[in-house]
Length: 539
Image 1 (tube, rainbow, N blue to C red):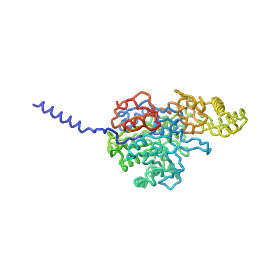
Image 2 (tube, one colour; image 1 turned 135 degrees about the vertical axis):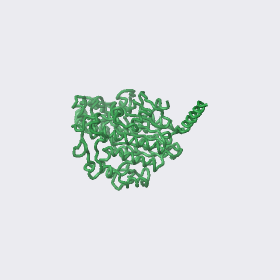
Image 3 (cartoon, rainbow, N blue to C red; image 1 turned 30 degrees about the vertical axis):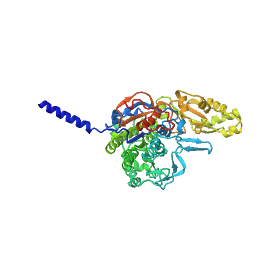
Image 4 (cartoon, one colour; image 1 turned 180 degrees about the vertical axis):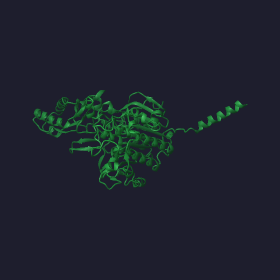
């Protein structure tokens, strides 16, 4: 008799547990992409012992972790990474070949989200208008909004304008970025005539003043930072005035502008706080129409630029970002429910060591002297064709020839392209150079040539694509990105909803993310997408 009672109690509790479990809906109600700028895939393991159990570790342990995810093109610029992830296409299709590209008609550099036809809203400071007009195809979120006649809400947030605008796509409900002068969240009239009241209320709280009144010191005692080469080293640029050691009195570094906030960990916290406010005020994930939120944490890349990938500053930034992620995940669980939400953590690109550091430890690397190369190239072409300045623009990656002059002189463009490419290969630090003719007429299926082809867009790329040796960067481009693993391989984790925990070692492309999300929601893929459904995502 007693055993029957015990069995009955067990069955009651078993049924209670079954019915108390939160069931995932057929489709997710909220999709959140979390970009951590400049995050290499090895950082997850490098800083593992410094992380809490509720941030990065939770995503790795309970999510689907793709250990071999990467970009398939040559010039891994930050803006190109955002565009590729949300379109499922490479720069050859979506057109964002870099943060800037040379515009032949106006003889100027074109910024990837600059739009003279729109203006900034939310600030009295002069800023150029921003929109996704230069993005040449649809994004995952565009297809989401099209699928239900704009019932889904799409919001994208980053302290950098392009990191908000490009992931938001053409049909975003709102994209927000930070004003460099005062760090207030602003937007453009591409999205609305004025920023919403809740954003104004958030700005009125003046969180940047609170953060910049802080002292940035290490989260843990300095002796715990064993993944760095030491706080005081000669390879760091540091902040204005050359300071590159802890502690940092941020009020002394701020000056008259607030741009410093985007280069310290508190900039990530500020971004997270605003994202949480957006979820609440926009009621994201609260109805039958799936919403999309993009959050891009940019301080990590800015800290990398100033201090390098082996710095205590960068390690501390990831320690603090781990806590921000833990709070974000916990909040989403409470407000929306993880069973209703897909969280994707990834990066726009990786990062590499400073050439100064590589040379110090006797590793190959250095600065490619692109401006000297341009001068020598013009001299070479003058000797061959008896004409000056046939090179119009060169940034160390793409070289643009003066096509108007070449046409006026009735010279053979293909011949000049090939001769120029052959000459560039002789420079120190150059691994290869491919002419536009070769990239347009051949089909490369592997190696750097394939990556160069995936980066090449006929209307925006140059006449020559230059491939540098590993460890080399152009002297005139501090935001250079190459097609080598340290730049192309990034973390990729799916977490929440019906995603089962596990690790996938199969090599996957970042173009696979957008079609996979489209499959989740049973909508059309972005119109230029070349990606596939991620393997093991439903296992």
